[in-house]
Every structure is written in C-alpha cells, then in structure tokens.
Image 1 (cartoon, helix red, strand yellow):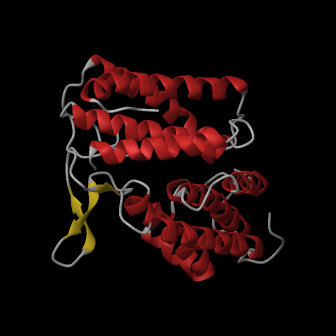
Image 2 (cartoon, helix red, strand yellow; image 1 turned 120 degrees about the horizontal axis):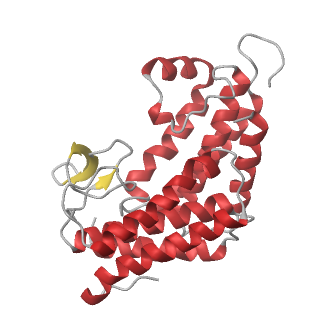
Length: 156
Length: 129
C-alpha cells in the first residue's frame, strides 16, 4: 500500500484511540495502538525502500496479498515478497534498515508481546502495561517520523 | 481461557465499540473480530469441541478437520467469524471501497456469533461449562 494510504490509516486508528479509555477499553485501545504503529512502520519501510509500496493488501497468510485484477475487477490473492508487513517479523524484512527503523521495530515488539496475553488471553492489564504500550507507541511514531518527516509526511 | 473470561473480554470489547462511529470502519471490523473471537471460543468450550485450555486465534487458522467438525455443530458461528476475518485484508489493511458496509456486516456477524455461542450446548450432553 502507498505511504499516503498507510498514513491515512495511522490518523484514523489514532483518532479512535484518542476516544477510548486505556483502562476501560484496553483491548480496543491496544488494538488501535498496534494497528496505527504497524501502519506507521509500513509507511517508513516503503519510504526507505525496504519494502514495496504496491497496492497489495496483507492477508492473514504471510506472503499472500490481495491485489485488484483489472480485467475482472475482482480482488485476487497472490504470493508476493517484500510488501507490507502484518506484524513485526511477519514477514521478515531481508534488507538493512536505518537505526531509526530498527528502533521502531523494537518498539513495536513491546506491543506485540502484550497482544496475546492481554487481548487474546486474560493476563492482568496493569497501569504498567498500559504505560509501556503508550510509550512504545510514541517511540514508534517518533522514530518512523524521523524517516517520514523530512519527506514531508506527517504523523499524529 | 475460561468461558467466563471469554465472555468478559467479548462484552468489554463490545462496550468499547459503542465509542466508534460508523465511519470508523477499520476499528469496527477489528473490534468485531476481537469480540467475535472471544464469543467463538466461548461457544467452542460450551460445545465441548475445545477444552478451556485451548483457544482458537482465528477461524481461518483452523485445520481442515477442526473446520469440518465445528461446521457440523456450529456452521453459522464459524461462517460469521470467517466473514469478519475475510473483510480485514480489503478494508482494514487495505483501502478497498465499501468499508462502512463491511463494518455494518461485521457487527451483524458479531451478533450471530454471540447468539450461537450463548445457545451452544455440549454435543455429548450435560451442562455447558
């Protein structure tokens, strides 16, 4: 997906995140955080040429993307490599990253580690967990912003 | 995760969805997927198809044998979760037109999953957990 498309997603997820209470609405608040961060990272990865910005959309199967078949006007799955990531490490990126994006990936890993225990499972959602997620999100936006900002792309 | 735990999570997420607008289609679809997954697992535990210590993350990750078995006892529940999951690539991770319609369908699917989960009874008889 194009950088502009990812950044629009960041803004939309971030806007919902801002209307949710991190404690009362933890699960959806967390999911908006994770989704916005992943889109910011995808935008930055495209910007530095680490991944392809083609209009192919991630499915749940790694390396399978939906693309529009112009002839039939329908969306068809195809195997593609080096496009959008679903999560950090899914798929692995086989190109070197600038330090800022290495750091953004590490920030996203903090969120990924919370995902299954606290959203899929029943691990306690403490004030510390919420603070760690918020800090990781802000770190991800700050670090991806270092790559996107000089090109004129703004993040929330 | 226990059936009660799944119910708590599903109800909390559904409550949070009240803070979304129809135009927040990505958030609505994702919330429906998360809440729907918890209702789905509750249903599977109540049916006795899966023990409480084994949860399914996504319907699309079911093995062929699991999908066949669950389809025989809860076809509508699994189809509804599959429909929500199937809309994520185009409308959440992608920018295909029609996101708001997909979000409306996702909420309807969530209602169907919840209804099926709460109505589920053990396939071998007895009281649901």
